[in-house]
Image 1 (spheres, helix red, strand yellow):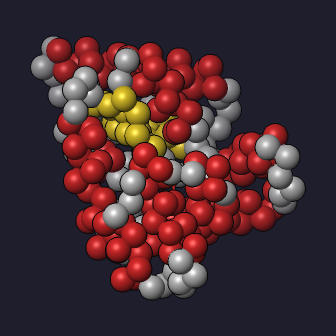
Image 2: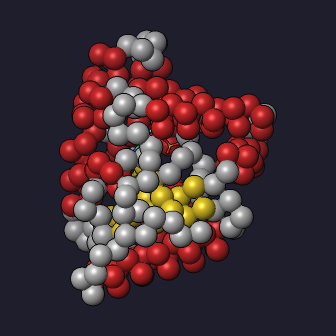
Length: 221
Ligand code: C5P
């Protein structure tokens, strides 16, 4: 089974993807880390983020086994990722890895921005996880603070809005729900409630597939 989870930054998609993978015994890939690693590689090479050749070179040679997740989870790496991920050659260099990860038995949960639309258009279940920008900024703020980092919530909100705008407006693989994705708004849900809602969506999707029925619902709520 392949489950595609897409959504904007801090929508809760990563936590849901991890828990769904554990629940169904599937492998999990946080595809944001791939783009973060590319942005981070450009920064640590001392190059500007508009150095496309450097970004493409980094994308062609990234090694997920050696990711420094702590550094990649930083705000700086996220911002860098959203710049380099708009380069079509960077995206193209990362496609095969993602597709073959998804195709490896027993299946996988992938989370990102274009999983349901580009990487796994035939996924068994597609969920588009979202939440209001203010709630997402609040979550990120609490996450950074719990790690002892001094951060400003208003600044995080600004960063989130900037990244949403960039991810949505880009020409290649923009952030948007696939036509056959279910939208799950987690603004008022805690993790347990969001997971319960996601499990319900997966089970409904599986049942619909088993019955051979067409499964096209634009919105859940
Ligand atoms: O999900 P995360 O916040 O880690 O992603 C960082 C950035 O990487 C996003 O803002 C987006 O620009 C990019 N990204 C992407 N496609 C994906 C995953 C992430 O363009 N599948």
